[in-house]
Length: 481
Image (cartoon, rainbow, N blue to C red; front, top):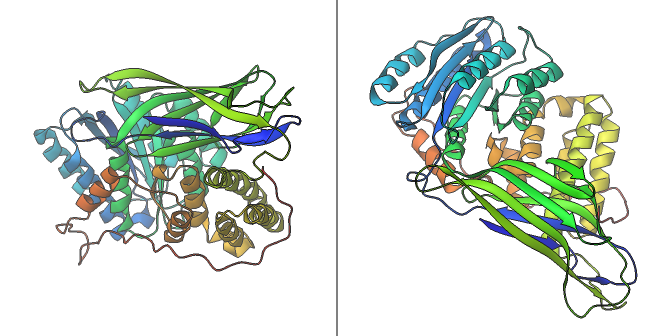
C-alpha cells in the first residue's frame, strides 16, 4: 500500500507558532479479486411490507439472485425478510452449485406482506451470522433493504436502532439501502457508518441492481482490514484536532485512528489540524515533526491474513521571515477543504433536524466563503448542500441527496448507490466513487436476461461533470480551519 504524510506548509517561520494541517494518504493497489480476495458471508435482509409490492420487491429479489450467482464455494449466504413478523428464509450456507439452486427457489417465492419490523429483521440476521463458525478472514456483512420507516418491533426510533445495532452486531458489519425519499435515509446512513458498512440511496426500483452490484464489488475487492494509524508529535509540536470524520482516540498528545478496511484502488485521506512550535533558530533543511505509523492486515496469496507495518515522517523546514510559504499547497488544501465540508454538513444537519434551517444555511455558507477565499472548488458543494436545507420543504425532499453527499464526501467507496446530483457534485470536486471491481459487477448485474421488467435496465450513465452555477455567497473571513 502506498502511504504518505505531508503538511500543508513545507516552509514556515521559525520564530512564531504556525497552524497547519497534516494530510495522511493511504492508497491501495489494484488487486486481481478473482485470485486474491477474502471469502464473504452475506445476509440480505429484505423489507417485504406492503409498500414494497410490485417492481420494488421484484428488483430486490432479482438483486439477491444476482448476488447468489456471483458467489463461489467458500462464500456463504443467508436471507431474512421482515414485515410485521420476521422470517429467516434460509440460514447462511456455503454457496455450492447444489445449494444455489435450492436458495434461488426460496428467493423466487418472496411476497409483500404488512408492516416494517426493521429491528427484528436486523437482529435475526445478526444472530444468524454471528453463530457461524467461520475462519477469521471471512468478511461478515448484513444488508438492510427497506423503503420506509421502522414502525414495529423492539426499536423504531433512529437512536434506539443505532444502539441496538451496536449492541448486537458482534463480528458483522451492516450496510443499509434505502428505497426512495420515503425511506429514513438519515437513519440508514448513520446505521451504515456506525456499523462499518455501506449506504445506498435507491431512487428507482431498477437502481437496486446497481446498489447490490457495487456492494458485492466492494466486498470482493477488500485489500486491507483492521487499519490503525498512529500519529505522534515531536517535541513541543501538537495535534490540535482530527478534522476527518473517523474513529480516533487521544493519549498523552498522541492520536490513534482506526479504519475498518480499504478497498482495491481506493485512496483514503486523513486530515489533522496541527500546531508547529516556535523554534530557537532557522534550520537549513527539512525537519521531522510528526511520526506516523500505519498497521494493517492484508490477504496473502494463500488466502490468509498477514500483518504489515509502515513508518512515515512528516517534515517541515523552519525558515526566516520572508522565506516562508504564504499559502498552503493547493492539492493538499483541497483535501483539507473536503474534510471541512463534511464537518460543516454534520453541524448543519443537527441544526436542520431541529428546525433551525436558517442556522444550517449559515454554517454551510460560512464554510463556502472560507473555501472560496482559499481558491478551493469545494465551495460549490457547500452551496448545493446549503440549498438542500434552506427550508422545511427542501430538507424533507433531499434526504437521498444529503445522505449521499455526506457519506460520499467522507468515503465514496462506501456508498453503493447515490443520488445522481450528489454523484455529479462529488465528481466535480474530484471524488472517485468506485473501483474497477465495482464497475465490473455493475456491468454483470445489468445483463439483458433480467426478467423483472418489460425492458432490461441499463447500467446508469456516469454523471456529467459540469461546474455548478456560481451562487451568491455570504461574506466571511478566510480561515485555515
